[in-house]
Length: 200
Image 1 (cartoon, helix red, strand yellow):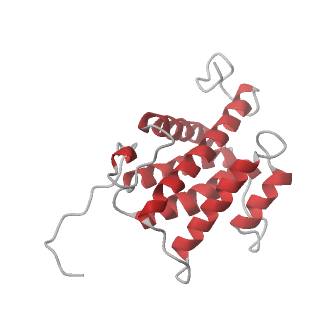
Image 2: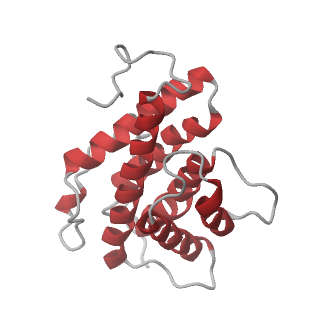
């Protein structure tokens, strides 16, 4: 690594990222369009923001999960480890927190056991998430471990599409459950005619 000319730091990311991950010349995602990713990200953010005002801690994680999506999107082309950390660690933890309705039970209750608990303790949605969602969360957890632990293999650029594909599928699922909760009136302060997140 050789020294290069100085550059100014990138400005702080404010608002939604406008990076189109499909423009990555070698490792573009293929399972969603730019507009689809941004729509899910933004609706999760708004539902989580409303939950902050209402004091619903588990639904607040929708906003936090959307922030992880946003940072991963912004850095998709130039920082694979950031994509791995935001998707594999932060997004997955926040998604599981939402689905379980709370955080860890104790220090031993790490992300992997909490994903296993979704089979019996899921708060939102059907009795348990589809097996595909659980598989995606396990895979994201593995990616997150690879970023965070030196003895494990680094995430490679050609794995970025798999990361964001899995995040997109999980995000779609948890947003569907959040809409259902609001649709049936639980903890919804707005009512069916006022809440723009009700099913149409």
